[in-house]
Length: 231
Image (cartoon, helix red, strand yellow):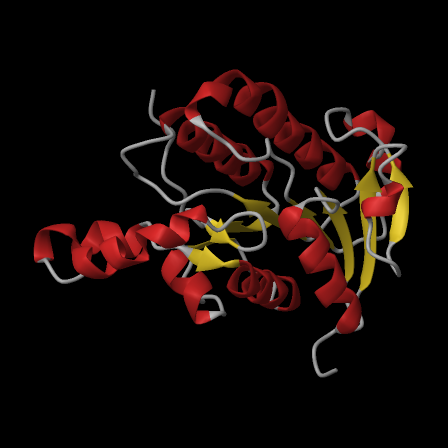
């Protein structure tokens, strides 16, 4: 492998995106340690080191982050929908706050955060919470990559594929083209590939990767500041 071997600490590594990412990281020769609650160890891909802790309490795992040079934070409410606004704050935002604390204590060099594409006409609270997470990471001073997909197609997450013809139609008309590109669907394979690229090519500052970059499978070297959260 040509790229430098990374030591990756992964939160949310037992989930939909996390398990796919962990397997690919291992295949590429990286060291992977996954935060897991007791009882969920069986969800961690073979070859990863399992570390027990609570994603909502940095004190339960902060001492185990070092010597990781990269922290990938994928914790979030599964199958988000507008009815889960309270959970977005109590789980998504709080776990991000705790991960930043743990990463800072461990002097992590690169923080990769699963955010969301925006603006969008739906899921306002979800967008606000993810933007607040980006702001907290930026304030921490840790170099970071913000991954901003809208929806990731894959096993058990395929219903939006029905919208593909509508996306194609929207791209035809100038009035809807920008929105269709900004909120384009991406696949789990594309998402994993771009996460791998981000791990192997750390951001020098703050880098935001939109659906366009994820669909290409690699990042854009241009540094982008995160949007401010709206009330």
